[in-house]
Length: 309
Image 1: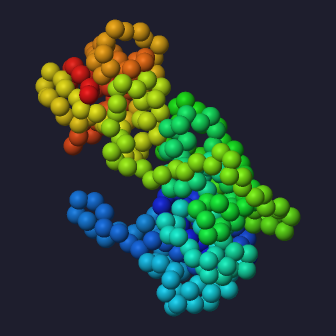
Image 2: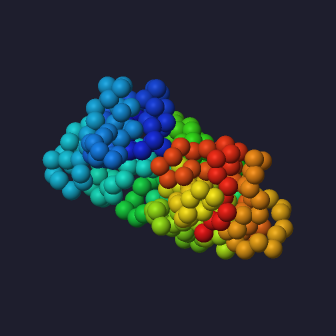
Image 3: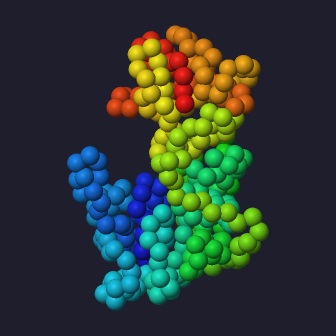
């Protein structure tokens, strides 16, 4: 098939690579325009553009698809299908209908659960036991199209957003190839509205830890927000007061205590145990603002934590 690919972040790259190495032909790659990044606000390419440039694939970066010239250029590729993976733009009806077989989306959830922008993180936050990848025939709704294929993936107690992202990116690449290779025999399944949920975009304000929550809930928050936006708290120690401490990983323990939420149960060279609203957490990887991430044993060699709030 002649394939147009549309995607932007790291999650999209594995699918693009799989398509590029398959018997199909990637005739064009669409991605978001370059954006300023970092403290210097340097204009930077997205991961999909980096890949496309490295493999000599035609790159297009329109700001939207409303312009007639953009629509005409899309039609000029005479594509059989457009594969869309975390592209970051709403495609109008005309664009959705331009390829012969329309547009297929790789979505990182078991639809209709977690439609929207952050399905991986929301699934971890909610304590879901499983998630997966759906290949969906796109329509004008938000992740409401018919599902052509669905593959499931367990969410373990140790999965972070990063580890689950990587597993689902691989699954998505395998799944889109399976659909394209069997497109004539696949029966689309209409989504039910029962159980539909929306995975809203992540906010940095959500990263602040409320120690009144249970150890299990806080652990989910920490795992869901790693690598972005990283769960954080205000911390005080023998050497500083109310500094921002990022918490990258913890272990839920069975410790019982009469300490108040956020109070330190113990902190020594062996580790650091913190009380929560229900249960306790053993900190394993932390990072003071402006410093590098440290294993808790290295951190407690330098600081004696006294309270988190």
